[in-house]
Image 1: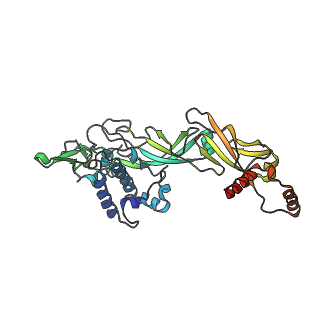
Image 2: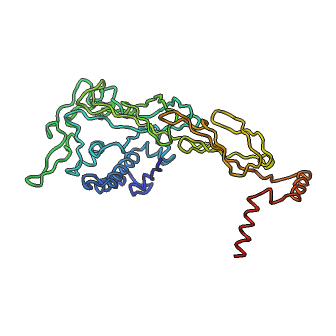
Image 3: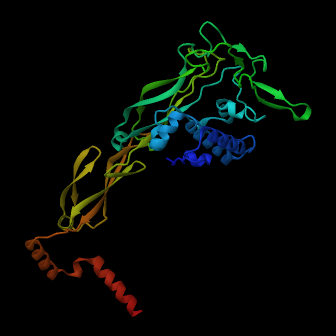
Length: 379
C-alpha cells in the first residue's frame, strides 16, 4: 500500500496549530485544489481529497489526539471516511460550514431526494498463514449512526424538521444577478433543505451519534496486501429522502483494507513463496536429506552432492492459493551454505587435510575463473 503523508504536512501547518489555523489552512487549500476550479486535473482532485481527509482528523480533538500519539495506525477503528471514493459534492456537503461562502462550487445539497451515506474504511492485519487458508477476521470500527433519541431527524422527540423557507427545501440558493448569478449552499439550512426549531438534546440537532460496530469479515485465501473487501451497507446512513429502515437514504459501504504482515521466513511473489534455507558445507558437498519449513509445517527435502550456494529448488503446490482459481503456487527454496565460524582442533585438522588434497579439477567454477583471469593478463 502507498504510504500516507503526514496530515500536518498536507495542510501546511505546525503540529501546535490551533483549530482555527487548521480550518483556515484547509479552506485555503480546498479553494486552490477544488475540482470545479481545476477541471480534468486528476492530481488536483487527489490533493483536494487528501486535504479533506487530513482536515477530518485534525479538526476532531479525539482523532487528532490519537494521530499525534500513534500516527496513522492510531486511527484504525475511528470511523474514517473513505475520501478516495467520494465525489466533490459529497465532501462539499460534509464541510458545508466551510464551503458555504465558496459560491458555485460542488453540489452538496441534501434536500430533495435522499442521498447515499458516506463510505468508511478500516484496516485489518493478517498473517501469511491466514493468506494460505483464508480467515474470518473480527473488525471493530466507529461510525456516525442515527441518533436513537430522535431516530436521526435531529429534532426534539415529538417535533419534526420543517422545509427551509430560504431555499424552499432545495438546500441551495442563487445569489447575485444577471450574468453573474451563482449557486451556493443555503446559509440557513447549510444544504440540508430543512430547519429544526427545537433540537434533540442528545445529538444537538445533528441526527447522528458515534456508534461502535463489530463485524466478522471473511478474508478469502490468496488475498494480496493492500486489497480491499467491500462490506455493503455498513457505512454511514444516508440523508432523508428515500427512506430506509432508519429513516434516511441508502447506507454507504465499509471498505476493509487488508494488510498482510511481513513473514519472518517466507517472501511472497504473486502466488509463489521464496525461502532462504541455511545448510552446512558438508551436507551441500556430500548431499543428503534436510528439513525445510512450509506454511503447512515441515517437509523433508533431498540435496544432491555438490549443491551450490544460492541454488534453487522448486516444490509445486507449496505456495499460496491464487485468489481466483485457488490453485496454489510453488515454494522456491534457495540454498544458503553456512560456513562454520568456530572449529575445534579435530575439525580444523580434518579441514587442513582436505585442503592439502583439494584440487581445482573437482571445482570447475574455480578452475574456469582463474583460467579466464590469466587469459586476460596475456591479452
